[in-house]
Image (cartoon, rainbow, N blue to C red; front, side):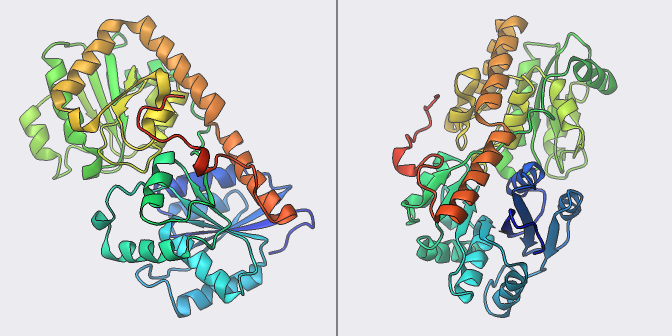
Length: 407
């Protein structure tokens, strides 16, 4: 790793660089890293992806090792160890279960010379629901969880859930996801322009969700609630965007044929203009039953000044606070969601905009990517210069857990 003397070399080892929430958070961290102080390198255990190229565009080296994550042992760890010998970093940061395990096993091969950090952005409601190979890796990481100098979670709920299955709690810190508040911000031009492009009247109420198609995202709940709301409020349009969110999706087609609200429901698929799209909304809703704990799309909508009405997955009650509303998922029926939307519509535009301003300010004050990046960098510097991270961030022992926290 050729770098300036004053730079700290940080190698990030991640399971893959698919466009998941965890990989995108790593991308944002890398894009905002102070390159005068740090020289990051990324090692993906997976294959080449578009995100690899996006990271390289920032002048950061990416090594895609194309390993089988079904077996993170043996010659694969030897290959990773040899690469680390060449890179000579000061800090190793693991991401995701397989990336964390690979980082620790490679460091073991190096004689545990380097400080290791793990990063977990996954909620774990029931380990039995995880794929068998992932469950095996989780069980191995439980046994190795006293080896990293810090385990970084993006939500308090995730930290609590992993502690419950045996993860070491002495090394736990919570570092939230960061939102790029320069990219995601209120924009009146985009509000009007996007509505015009989609054929949505300027005076319509627009409710939307950005989430890839997955059973846990529960798009059916959103669509059925939309159908019910239209029976009471005609001037409403609904936007759904994300990978797989198209009319020809075989999992959605039967529901769409039964509901039949084509003139009010806009299925946009995967989009590259999410900041513009969010600005077209009056209300953002996430109807997930489980999530990664910290929804990027909710944080991005809040940063755009859009009030959020969501289910209470992950740390969303804590993140949204008093700037929106979370519904208990067990009680989030289509009729309950439609009624909640109707209440917000009747509350009026001024009230919704006031909520949106508070949401924007909350993200700017607590979850902006610059501050989150600084938290990571503080950890790295303290590890290298002092061999510890005392007093950094939020220790698990001091955290207050629970779905009703709104601080």
